[in-house]
Structure formats: C-alpha cells, structure tokens
Image (cartoon, rainbow, N blue to C red; front, side):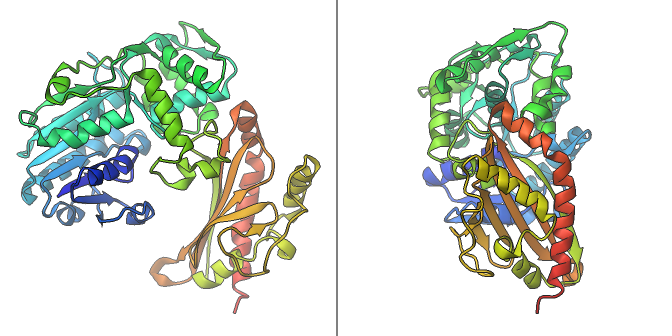
Length: 474
C-alpha cells in the first residue's frame, strides 16, 4: 500500500492516478476528505488526516509500506516554517510507530546559503523527517512545468496579463525546469530502486534556462509578444508585493516562490539519471505538453482551479481563480436555505440589490450577450445544464451546492457558487456565496478589481437575504 499524504495538493492530485496506473494500491489523505471524493478516483482508499493532529495519523498509516509526504504550509502565513517542522515531526513519528518502510519527500532544489525562508523551510522539513527511524528518500525539484503548478502559473499569468514586464534581475537566473510527467515518473519509480533509501536526489529537465527564456518560450507558443525590462533596483521581495494584482496564484504561495528566484536552481541530477534512466522532455516540449493537457482537461484539480470549461475553454485565462464572497448563518434549516437558493433568477430576481444585477445584464445585452433573451425552465426546480438568465448550472449537489457558470460577455470567465451546510450542533444553517473569476489578460484584472467594492456589498446582502427568505419556506 502506498500512501499519498497531502493528496489534495497539486502534486498529490496528479500522483494518485500515476500510482494507480502503475498498478499500486493507493490510500489518499487530506484534511477535508470531501475534496478527494470529488476527484472521482476508483479503487482509492480515502482518509481524512492532518499532520498537525497526531490522533488522525494512525488510521492513515495503517498497513502502509511507502508514504509520500507532500505537505507544506506556504499559504499559512508568517508561521509556515514552524508549522512545517511540527507537521513533519508528527508524521515521521507516527510512520515509525506504524511500521512504514519508506518515506518519499518532495522538496525543492536548495542553492548555497538561501535567504528565502521558503527554501530554508523545505530543507528543514527533510532534515526533520530524517531525524526519525523510517528511511527517507528526498526528491528535490525546481520549477515544475504543468498546468496548476504555482511557479508555472505565475509565469503564464505574467505573460498573459502584462503587455510590458518591469522585472528584477532574477529573470536571468538559471534553472532546470522539469515536466510534470517526468517528475511523476521519478516519484513512482524511486521507492522500488535499490540504493535510494536515505538519499537526497536532485531532479530536473535537460535544459538549463533563464526565467526570461521560459517566459519567451511560453509567449511564442501561445502567440504573445513578451516585452521584458529588467532593472537592478527591483529586488525579488519588492516585486513579490505587486504579484497579487497580476496573478491569481494564491498570494502567499506566489510571494514565497518569487522571493527565492534570485538564486540559480540547476539540478545536479546525474545520480537519478543513473538510477532511473529515461528520456526527459526539454523546455518547449514540456510547455507544449502542459498546454495540451490543459486544453484537453487532463488536469486533476477542483473545477474552480483548473477546469477548462469554467474558463470558457480558453487555456490562456488564469488557471487559479480570483475570488470574493461572504457567508451568513441563521435559524432556517439547510434544506429550506438550499430550496431558496435554487429559486435564483427569473421572475424571482437575485434576492438582493436587483438593480446592480439588472445593470450588468443590460451591459451584456448591449454588447450582444444572452441577458434578457433567456430565463428559467422552471421557477423552483434546477438540473445540470439549465439556463438561469445569463448563467448556466454546471454542478448541483442537492441540499448542498449550486454552481453557476457566467455566460455574459466579459474579459474572462466567471463562476458563482452557493454552498449550504448545517449550523453548529446541527442547529440552523449557514450559506456562502462565492464568485470565482479567471481573468483574460489586463482587461480581466481591471474588470475584477473595479468590481471589488460592489462584490463586498453585494455578497454580504445576498447571503443575509437568503437566510431571511429561507425562514419563510415551509
């Protein structure tokens, strides 16, 4: 049995199918097992577990021979390094008690004397894991080329969103980016190779290139001219502060990545090539494969982060979504709240601030969009594929979740999702409304930030009104 600990993350979501394809029995864990259930994996044992909760680990590790440790806390804020150390110690201790024979840890390439806390933390996690009895194989990789990889998506967003890039000198730092399929092949193969226990192994692609090379290669393949102005006074740390405005990659993750880019990341991969020889994809082949996988929706990820249908089938739209929303609690039952949610649109309107909704639909109608030309099939019943004015139902979990795709014209792709759940102790309920926006270039970013004040006002009122109306549902 192979355990993928952290299976809801980017690598874990892709590693599980790779292990299944190689004939392995697989157990997958995440803090929220519902995220894993949505993947639709067949024959995978799904377990809820959290490395910060030692009591949750024995069940996850029971009967496991090899455990992949894919956890990091970059998105947790300033304390992520301490959180990572504690999580690694809990996991390694529990793995030893469970009789696990091998831990495979995916870390990052580490340059000499790194100043980035993110890089130091990745190295420290490996050291903590090695401080316990279970043999550890640490695979160190640099940039991963594949749809959904945070570093790759930062590159894509920069090229797609900015007509001119003013960058620090890190654009000329060198790296050996590795294609996602090549990294997965190494991860699947390494535990079965003699001589890999207790080893730290660099992996990388065959091309040593600069980040400017990567941006220009991607731009050439998608037909975008890349204009780069490198200035010596703009440090990686300073440049990381404006990332939130130009990339939809989660800000803490993007910032941690960019702050480490002042270093060269060239893999010394002679040993892994000797142990596991294979033909590796070069830079252009890697990017072509990533674009192709994205277009064909081979990406294993939750729809709001990667589904090509939710990006209007445009792979150049931001992979990760900008988001805004609110939630409200009340005494109404979850069933009553969800039935209320399902009456949205048509003659009923949009619960709150209908004038704002009408103005947006009018703008869409003026530019040839579907607003005012369509309505609902039924006033209260919904099914996947139904049209609600200028929206379309793309997912429906009765009693819990309603997901609508925006079909109004705009510089990007939008999704509106409602989620309902029971209140504390089963009393009452809560409802959230969240807008997801995949921007299309600079106009998409301007559109999103221009609507920021309206979103803050709209979603607070929307969720509260739904709760109030639900108390009247019998």
